[in-house]
Length: 113
Length: 115
Image (tube, rainbow over all chains, first blue to last red; front, side, top):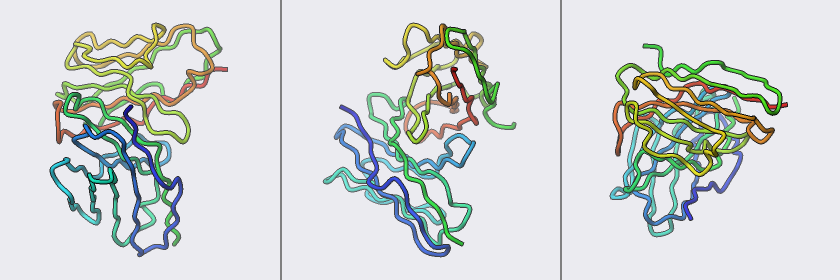
């Protein structure tokens, strides 16, 4: 069945270091992937997305890497800041239902000042 | 525009009672989504609307759950005969359109506690 999961439930990073959050997915039909950030008491916030025909996409301080061979997704945050502390979710869509986003369980990122 | 608005932010109810939540999407967003999120988990898709039409419902949406978007603007999610297992955060999101590369904006959610 469809599933999106994360390797590490928690991650602690020193301020200024780079963070890498990993995600595995199992559905080969997944066509579109999204990373969300959720701060305490708030709804998820879009960070960056990538389509299955790409391997890498860069945003401001964030990079998403997609390895379709091993069904692996990662989010890299450069120069991690205290404001980056949150729970990060990877999510997937399939061509057949772009409106139905399937979320993974989340990784909690803590930035140590 | 202040984003997606949900009301109430918190709701405590006794088991067996009915509850109704409201979501006001961003103006002109024709897609509206409901998700449920339990502690430590990612949001789970419940249903979505395109304007006033409900286009997809998850198997999670039992017959005790009903969602409406009567005029294609705000939406309500009602849970009848609440059970303790219904305790969760109910999130609403909206997007300008559907499909790939369309960002969905989430509200802050309604936290339901069934006692």
